[in-house]
Amino acid sequence: MDYTSYLDGDVLGCDSFPIFLFHGVIRKQKWNVRNRNRKHLELDYFTSVIKSLYNAGNPVSMDEIVWHHNHNEPLPDKSFAVTFDDGYRNNFDYAVDVLEKFGIPTTFYVATEFIAQNTSAYIDYVEYAYEVLDKDPEIINRRAMKSPCIPTTDVLRGEIDGLELTDKMTWEQVVQLSWTSLFTIGAHTHTHAILPMLNKREKEGEIFRPLWMLHQHGIVPKHFSYPEGKEDDFDDETISLLKSAGVVCCPTAIHGVNTHETDLFRLKRIGVK
Image (cartoon, rainbow, N blue to C red):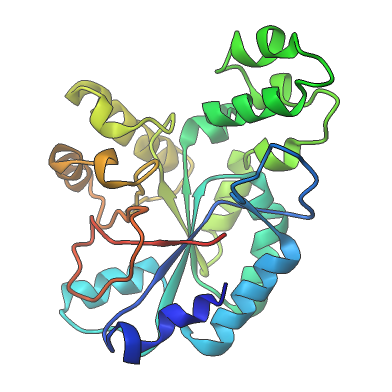
């Protein structure tokens, strides 16, 4: 797909800008079940997308988006932003070099339990189980389904080279990215919980704990993104708690483009596949 079409102000409106949502970058897709939704893009393809956006548009940071919104000023023509959710190590191993080469400001939203314990979302365990089903049907019970919250490196190593899809960044790597002026670190809850499914106290934990953990590592987070990020994955109470915690911006995963007037806690993003 030609993602530069989202930069066409004549079609989308001269004040429009897209925020592109990525999750991971891998060397090569080599699995039958895992990553069938292209959550992790092959490096060559990712590079081509970033290069085409760089050549066609004007990359801006999420902080610039906030500034223009607060000052009621449109962004420069053909502006776009790049974001990554979750905190996969492959962001550090592969994506960062490409982003630095083209000078693309990028916000990485990390789920702090993923970083602290190298855990994964439940769907990663399910996909792994189906991937190895033909080789060992009992693996679903023995590894993947009994303990969906045990560390990635315990469950997902197995006989399939799949750590590229599951390993998360270390705290050292997250901090290293935060030291680079091109990159911003935001929070993505602690456990990747769906916030409206929680009571208020649980929501507070999923919002305040990751912000505190980032502070403990010398990062002052002002940015957050909602896990899953669809219409039912955030609510007014969530937004109120985020604002009380000092968060200034929280994009969704709802498909679409934005203007400088779009609510900073309801920004749309374009998922890149």
